[in-house]
Image (cartoon, rainbow, N blue to C red; front, top):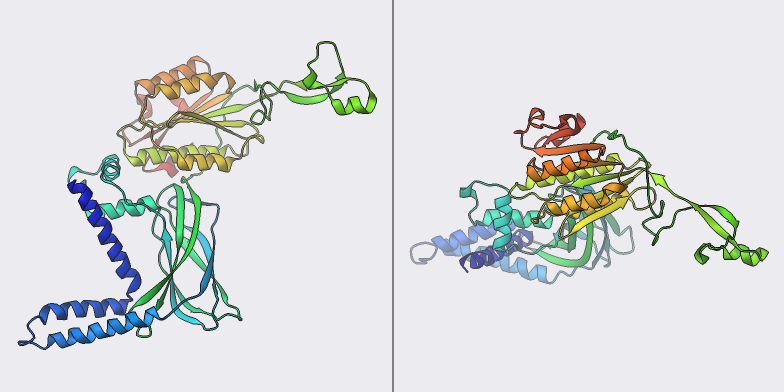
Length: 446
């Protein structure tokens, strides 16, 4: 109950601080501070005349507030977002503003509003616990609450000044370039835009809210990695190249031939029958091609968030290295249930796989779920790439299972510097050790 009350107070303090930051200019903050100090020191009006300074500052702020209330902005906006941002990398987008009135505006400011909900105590506790902060830094404080709130929203977009907005009837559209660095992967939601207009004294700003809900995806950070050269034979794929769009066993179309007794009716080419009056059927051939499985370990347990984010980034990097190959790529991981997403050769596009990786979350269930998913699909795969976050009994069993099936294999093992190649007892040449603090340099050596 106490923590719930504290979080509610933190949210109120945050809202008040944002209101003061958005409504008062730098000079307005100075006047506000002077007013508060003069009020404190001028309580005894018989002993000092400081109260007169308080009255003067109060009158200035009242006039500034009233002036801003009579200023009505008529502005429309169009936000042009890219389809994707990348976590930790600076991105750019544009906002086009159009003046609907016959008078120009000066000294405006554009304030983007990101959508987010205040965290509860359980979210905060889990986030700081998985960040492996020292126990004395896990206390409930406003600074840590604000840190998580900003992270959950996706970041902070700085306020952009607008020197002048021309009146209607002239070149009244201006394009503003905004730079933004996302703090996390996942969905980024924009609630709308505030346009701040100062009063004539330059103390107080009136805000005009323009609702403009949009969203885009923040992809996991990706690093250059060489294409993996894994030996592996092409295997028969029921359904051919179009297996994702077909139902049942349909192979690749080759030619037409005359009808033979016993041929199924669904293979009859009815257009040829209508043209020539003779039954002909469509002839197919079995399709063989390479198919690589990318197995992502989502069972992070008590490992910190950086471990898991490193694993996702490594998986995304491997996906990008496979985008130009003439094979299928199966992304396999476990969330609330086991998932397998296929891309390549016209089945799906690589950006969709990146979107899936942008949304993947940690899993707290049994690692055996992932092993079962791999086992059920292993007969279709030509090779397997595993991204693991630890090297324990369950993961050793999975790798041993793949080796027993003579499966061409590569393993990316995320670690904190404590793992050495010598400590891997079975075929260490299959392993690529990636320190989560130096992903780029470790992947460049692959």
